[in-house]
Image (cartoon, rainbow, N blue to C red; front, side, top):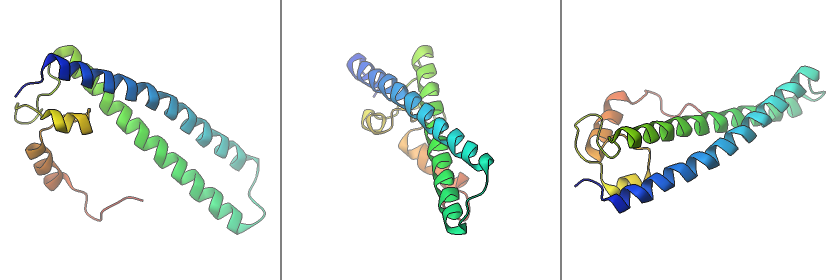
Length: 130
């Protein structure tokens, strides 16, 4: 069942609010990454343990920024789909994406059946990268 105008309005507002929040967060994340890189340019830590912790924190900050940028791109794509009228339509099968799914993940571009199949066929061996 296609989205009602009220559902579409609610989801569009959710996407826009989350985009704004992510844009601010990405700015802060990138500021942290730049600050850590600047500190690293100033010289190595005197203590290898401190250097190890600093490296871990830097890696985590970069992972946060990468995750946020990925979500921001997904929401930008959702805005494009709103603009061209294809929001809520699965990119694989052309069927409707359920409202409940879109409320949980407003950037979803596949219905649950197609997403499940996509994850099975495109899963990376070895699990998590962190």
